[in-house]
Image 1 (tube, rainbow, N blue to C red):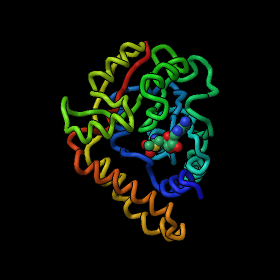
Image 2 (tube, helix red, strand yellow):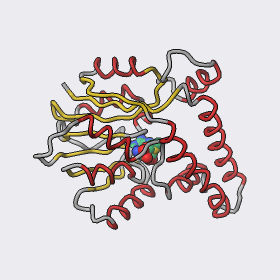
Image 3 (cartoon, rainbow, N blue to C red):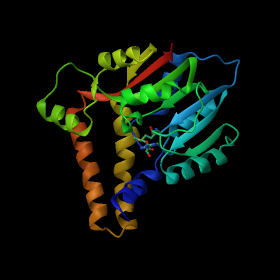
Amino acid sequence: MTELELIIDLHKCSERQGPGSESDTLRALDLLNLPTDQIMKVADIGCGTGGQTISLAKNLNGKITAVDLFPEFLDELNEKSHKLGLTEKIVTLEKSMEDLPFDMGEFDLIWSEGAIYNIGFENGLKKWKDYLKVGGHLAVSEITWITQSRPKEIEDFWKAEYPEIDTASNKVKQLEDNGYTLIGYFYLNQESWIENYYEPMIARFETFLKRNGNSELARKVVEEHKSEIKLYQKFKDYYSYGFYLARKN
Ligand SMILES: C[S@@+](CC[C@H](N)C(=O)[O-])C[C@H]1O[C@@H](n2cnc3c(N)ncnc32)[C@H](O)[C@@H]1O
């Protein structure tokens, strides 16, 4: 297996592929205060195995197109949606978020948890806006500084990993500059990172290594994830995922 295949293997049996929780998804949905008397057309971009897709399907009057680059994640989502009787509400689509086959103004709501960074926040805002109706909504979570200053070590790390990391006020400005009106904002608490994401991941390390013959590459993947967790534990007071709720003007 290649390193990417191993990363997919580590993450595919998980509820979520990034920090988040059902209560975060529902809080974001609540802030949007969407109409309930019409069937919404929704895209969930970078859905992974669909933790948030399932929550949306259960709590929204709508049909969701759940998009991800990796079929392994979409297979898991399809299986869950089948078991829960949600196949009428969820259709999966294997596509890159950079090259979506959607029509102009097709969607009432675009949702994306922990995924827009793959094409960059501002680029994503611009590209996806075309697929939204005027007055349609965007719900997107994005890595965000939660304080105005921070230690150099974490600043350097994120500037190298994802130079677009910024404060919420600057992210909101980007939304406004690109034709959206902010409806709400909150950031994910530490439980959404630790209890919901990192602890279940740590619990999977042993079986992941066994399944992959304890290979050098599999051990490297585990070590890299452990470093990410250590970094979060050390600097968790400085960054999180900000959840941005906005309307297209
Ligand atoms: C951090 S995970 C978040 C997954 C899910 N939304 C969640 O919160 O659990 C990012 C997701 O983006 C997907 N992804 C990465 N690059 C992509 C691309 N170019 N197009 C579509 N999906 C992509 C990954 O496969 C992964 O499922």
